[in-house]
Amino acid sequence: MTTDHRSLCVAQTIPLLLSGLLACTPLPTKLGDDLTGGDSDTAAGTGAESDSGEGLDPDGSEWSFMLPAETWVVSIATMADGGVTAIEHRQEQYEQRVTRYAADGTELWQVDIGSHSIGRLATLPDGALVVGGSVDDGGLRAAVWRLSSAGAVEATHVHPLPGDAQSNAHVQALAVSSDGMAYLVNNYGIEEGTPGSELWWVDLELEPQWSWTGFDGRADQVAVMPAGEIRSMEEGSMPGTRLLRGFTPEGVPAWNEVLPRPTRFANDDPLVYSEYSEELQATRVHGVEGTLALDFVIPSPPSAGGIIVTHRNGLATVGTVDFGHQLSVTQFDAAGVQLRELVRPPLALDLVAPQDLAIAPDGAIYISGFELTEPPGEPHGFLLKLPPPA
Image: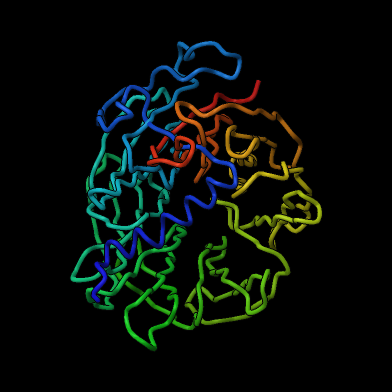
C-alpha cells in the first residue's frame, strides 16, 4: 500500500507534539479568531488576561493570538526592534505561514512559503530571516528560504536528494553566522542506504558550500560557534545519551563527546546547553567552551514536559504543571539569578503545550505552541507575549 508523503509527515510530527502536551501543555490561538474554525489572520492582539488578572496592557507590553483548529506555532525568533516572527503550521493545507509582529502585537506581514513540514526559523545579522522546511516534489524534499525584513522571498535552496511518494526529508535544525548557515536534514523513507541525517553549509545567498553525510542515526541540533566551527547533537548509541560532535568551519569532523543525559543547545546561543535530570528533577545549564564557568541548576516542576531554555538576553524555561492545565515560566539573567516565576492558565482551552520560547532585548518573553480541549481535541496554535520582569 502506498502512503501519501504528507500523511507520513503529519503522522510523524503530531505524536511528538501531543506527547509534550500530554506531559502537561495546552494549545493556543490568535485571540479574536473563531475557535470553531474561523480564520482571522490579521487579527490584532487583544483580550489576553495578564498575570494580575487585569486586561491587555494599554501599551501592548502583553498580548496574545490564537489560531484556528489544526494549527500550531512551532518556531519563533525575536527581532532587534522587540517584535517577533513566528512560523504558523496549518495541518489541513500542509503549509507554513511566516508572520511578523511588531512589539505591540500589530501584524506587519505574513507570507505562505509553501513548506509542507514543521519549520525552523533564524534571524540573519541584517534582520533578514531564514526558514527551513520542505517542498513537495513527488515526495518531501528539504528546503531553506531566505526572507527579507519585509517578508519577500529572496532566495531558495532545495536539497538535491530527489524524493518519491514514500519520501519525507525536512530541515530539522538550522543555525546562522555572519557569513552563512549550517542546517541539518533528516531523511525518512527515501531509500535504503540514505544517511539518517545530513549536515549542510550554505552561504547567505543559500548557495551550497559543502555537505557532510556521516550521521547514521537522527541528528536534531546544530550550532555555529563564534570562530565558525560547527557543533551538532544526535541520539547516542546508548539509551539516555547524546553525542556532541565538532566540525571545522570547512565541515571536517574534528571530535566527538558522549554526554550522559538528554541534552539540547540553548535555542539561540551555541555557547550554552541544558540537560534535564530526572534524579534532581531539575534542568542544569552548562557553558560550552567560551562560557565554561556557567554551570547552575534550575529547579523544574516534576510534571513539566519539554523544558525549553534560551540564553540570549538572559535565560528562561517554560513547561507545564497541573497535568498540562497551566503554563509554568521562570526567567533568569545570564548568570542564573532568578528574575521571576509565574504560573498561568491556558489562553482559551483546557491544556497548553509550549513549543518554543524567546527573550526580547528588553527582557519580554514570547512563548508559542498550541492548546487543546480535554480530552485532547484539535490543536489551536498560540503566541503569547509577557512584559519584561518588573
